Length: 188
Image (cartoon, rainbow, N blue to C red):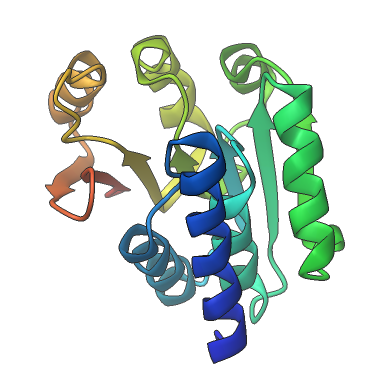
């Protein structure tokens, strides 16, 4: 269960990111939506692409607590990973999250088939289109992918969204939550 104090801490982290960096990590509505999806699907093997400051990793790890799941979070920035680790440790979730400083495309290409229940993409969205074949291979049947910023004005993810929508066996929809969440179900 997501406690009121955890919610308060998550909101405080978001506000701190906005104040200190001038940019926002995942917003509260998006965080709650991710939490609900992970809990409802009982996802245990979570992959996050784009750790950022660790806020979304916290939402995901808290959601996997009941199922004793695990979050693996990928990012190119060692500095951001360091900040994320401090936040994860402060929540007492250090055993629930593994942070890797790697290129997501290369890492996905080497990953075995079907080990991912749930994937959250909040990285450089223009880099995503070549990942789609790898995502299809690593996502288990019935698994979910959520991509943030699907309604961003520049539409850096349009090519990725078009590729997903053209692929049989996948059901996808964009939800107008904050900057837009594109949700993909592997419907096999």
